[in-house]
Each structure stands twice: as C-alpha cells, then as structure tokens.
Length: 412
Image (cartoon, rainbow, N blue to C red):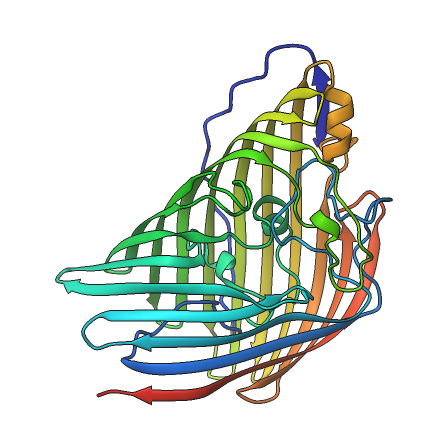
C-alpha cells in the first residue's frame, strides 16, 4: 500500500536493493542515443510538437508534485494547448582510428531555452575478443535505454512516470563512462559530477552507476535486457524547477518551498525489450521496466529539520503492434511510494516537500496510434488516463514528429 507515516523513533536503515524482471518494447520508433559508429560526420535534427486538450493536474501552488516523492530536475507537467515536446540539432563525428565526439543542442518539454544537452568525446578499441569503450563529457546515463529517449524517439510523447518522479525526466550529467563488451553483453560503469537530480543540481553532490546489458536474437525475435544500480549524494538539494521565478511554457511564475534535502539516494532496476517480426509487414513488441529507489537523509528549512527514509518502486508495461507504417500501442504505469519521517517538524516539512500522500497510488495508462508517413514525418494520436495526482484527469493529444539526417559524410 501507499502510505506516509510520521513518528519520533530512529529512522529505519535502508533495505538492501533488489533487482526484478520485466518486459520492454523495441518498436519502429528510435532508441535515443545508440550510435552506429560508422566513420564520418553526421548532422541530425528532430522536432516533436503536440496539442493537448488538457494538461497535468497541479497542486494549489501551481507546482506538479506527485504526492509521496520529492521531485526535481526537468520533470515538468504537460500543459493544455500546443507544446514543443522535443527539438534538437545533433552532430556526431566518428574517426576510423576509434575516436569520436558528439555535440547536441536541445530543448525539451516546452522549455523556452535551448541548452547544450550533450558534449562528449569517446574512444573505441577492439581488443579481441573484447571491445573497450570510454567516454567523457556531458551525456545521458546508459543504465537503461529509456533514459536515453525523448519525445521524438519514444512511442508516447510523455516520459515514463517513474523517470519523471525519480530522475527528473532524464538523468543527464557531466562525467565519465567505461564499457566492456563481448558476445552481446555490455558491462559499464559511469561516474558523475553529481550536478543533476537526484544529486545536487548546480553543485557537486557525487553520483555513480553500474549496468549489465545483453542484446540477442533468434530468428524473427530480438531482445535487449539489463540490470543496473545507481547511487547519488545530495547536499542542500532543493526543487529548482520553479526557482528564481522560473516560467515553464504557459505556466505563470511560481516558486517551490525552500526545503532542502541532505542525504543519499540508492536505486536499482531491470528491463527487457523484445520484438517479434511475425511477417515482413507485421511486428509485435513489448516493453517493461521495474525500478526501486530508496532515499535516506534529512529535510530542512531555515529553522526546522526532520529525518526521512523512503521505499519507492516504479514500473511500466508497454506493448505495440506494427502493421506496415502504422503502430498501435498501450502503456500502463504505477508508482508505490512509502515514506517514514521523524522529528518534531516531521508533519510540517513532509507536507511542504510533498512526502505526505494520504495512501494515494499514482497510476497512468494510455493508448497511442502512430502513422509513420515517411522516413522523416510521423503523426501521433494519444489518449491518457492520468491518476498520478489525487484528482484524476484525462487528455487527448495530437502531435507531429519530424526527424531528418541533414548531412552525412562517409569515409570508406
């Protein structure tokens, strides 16, 4: 059950993280930032714009706060009307010596300003039977492929609920990555500056993750599965989404409560993506993901402090059938959020930070139709039932997606 409890006892120690299993999807839409490493230079651009008849329900302060979890990063609510879900210009260069680099300027989730979303360099060395790869710079974490995707790559226009709640929409930071691959397996470790939620945005909180992925196939069936673990440290972390009079999209200038979090966040998860080609024109794909997140630390404002521990799980199951240029998909998502807050100011601070959820169980489900008109343009029609907030909502969305390779020089 979903619950938040307030007590005056010592906080419970964090339970050891467990790893579960799920089902996940690999459809006709792209897979975020996976590269083909073909020598040469490639310039790509993409845009996803969506009209919605309703937006996500927000609280009385105008803030999107899923009850039971402290939010941050770039987890912004979708809004009524037309929104720019995703737009980017991406430049890749791969050298036949093994060196490569990437720069991407992007804006996401109806943001008003473009930013340097990726800027990194890497090197690949084929050390038979192993492939060694290292990257350094600003980039998205590879612990799960869902973290690499935005509105132009996903089947649905909205990010999975668990990514919004636990990782601020996308875990993107400055750091280093090393990967070792053989026979479909990839073992990776990533070390981060810790300047992205759930660490401490704007400063160095420190974070790292490890992952083990496996890609394989047999006949018409292909799959991509993996396990991962993540840990982050935060010092003085506040919800900066609406700080300094921030205005997002059509939202009026609002400010989040100045309550800070000091502590650690441990997370682990599992995923599997599978795709079966029934015929040349018909394919069936499934996607699922499970993750567990456990924050532990203190919440405080200018004069009060309380201790908190949380045990959260997030999951989604998604399926799609593709017939020619047409995709029909469904997705069901669920969060289970449990908090224990102790101290004289426990109830007041838990209410300010949104940790009190009154047994609410956040859920969301949706259906989507996507028509891939040609290699560059797609039309997307969605219907969503959103129970992530205590007040349920429904919305219809109609969107356009455009992706194009503007330039590609190949070197033989």
